[in-house]
Image (tube, rainbow over all chains, first blue to last red; front, side, top):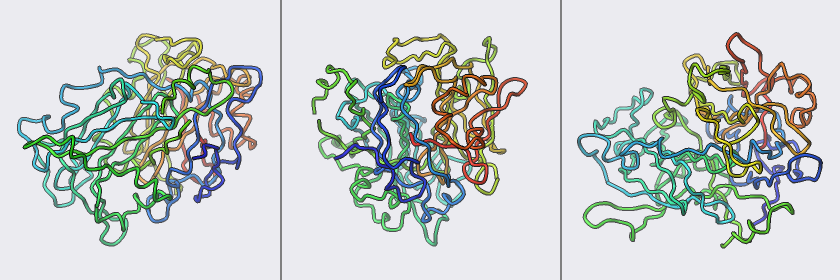
Length: 271
Length: 187
């Protein structure tokens, strides 16, 4: 697949000002650093009429191309001190166990060159099994669960792997359109190793019957890209008489290949 | 080289507050740190209404223009007590505030860049983050020579990135849409 930056095809009219972006490593005096691929084709447009709240919250002017400088190729190096003892296990954060189907959600975080993204913070939040968030703004008549907060944090390991234990979230109604329901999902937030890699997204479950009417799911223009938000049922990771399991791999943007990239880095690309 | 397609972005939605804010999020440095200053502002939507459920993240160099990161070719430098990252949800008035240090100039492809802070804005109704930069008003000469600022042709648009000095820091309001829309970047 081509990694040539090409924002001109963005359907939202808020694409980059330059149809064909210059490479970030153009030779000139100063410090050149390898940039990251631009993956506009993957993402939903900021202006998406099917999701009503985008109307007043999307820029109408074309985005300005930002070359990737040191500020954009770096990111916070966060340590385990951000993590609490039970942040990886959302079923053990209270005295009792939450209601619902216990699941393991795990996967690997890699970049688009296949390199694992190690030691990066993964944060999740979700509704409980009845589809209700522990949030003052969520007031629909489904029960709160005194034993479920719905928030988790882990750092990926040296191979970029993460693992949470939680309960399967329920679907819930919202007011975007008549009889609107969100498919069951878990919110994910990742830093990656560069500001360019920062990603907030949602993980969905296979065979959800609600995708057909969900503008979030449908806002991703390419059907194959939508599928990349879908976890797969992972029988091999289920734990007998204890928990079902889903695997969801996450791919962040990789490095742009420039003549300035060292040979060593190219050799590291093992996939 | 094989290329794996990336995972799409989705909105943080209305319930981000249970998952993303940290108690120390707004404090890139602790209160009382010499040189600490507040970066404050209000996020507005296209109708001029404050956006009360957004999340602001800032990322910046330290006062010497260095990063605590292995990809900085000058080597990582850890300035104890300084995180580089600020994270703050907007409040009931649409406002954010991050306590930090002023960054130094950062080397760039065309020479030094003016001191700047990268800003991400996440929110309900935003299927992806938007990214902007904050520049400092007293850095007139550095700003005039900054390649990113200079890539913005319209002086009024360029001005949306330059913060205003306040008593204990700087203010940069962010307008997601409208006549005085903030300049956002294709990152």
